Structures are given as structure tokens and as C-alpha cells.
Image 1 (cartoon, rainbow, N blue to C red):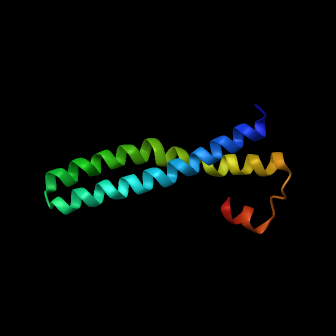
Image 2: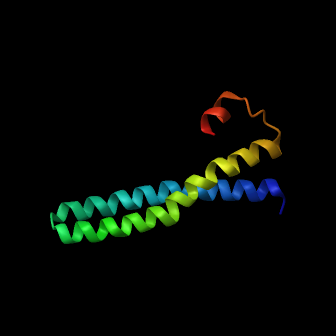
Length: 87
């Protein structure tokens, strides 16, 4: 597997993780808040913090790195407006 393919795979997986965990976490927090039970809300919030740390933070760190790597490997100019904005 070429470097470009690996970078693209990790980049797409990272964006999928960001979107998926964001939606999932929002859903579970909304459901917990609807119970109006402080114990349930606190418990779910604790799980959300763990999930954010493991999945979201990792993906957030990998996205700009893999995006930068892809731009370099493909040969896109790094001073392109949308690339600068995303990095």
C-alpha cells in the first residue's frame, strides 16, 4: 500500500470518527439530560469525557497531520486557500 493510500485511509477514517462520535455523544448526552436525573447525567458525562479523549482528541490531532501529508504527497501547493484554512 502506497503512502498516499495510507494517508488517505487514515484521513477518511479520522473524519468518520469525528462525525460518528460527535453524533453519538450528542445523542447519549441528550438522552441523559432528558431523564433529569443528576446521577444518570453525571455518569453519561463521565463516559462522554472518556470517549472524547480516546476517539475525538486522537482524530482531531491526526486530521491536520494526514491532511498536510496528503497535500505534500499529491503535490498540492500548501499556500492554497482551502488547505491553509483547514490546517
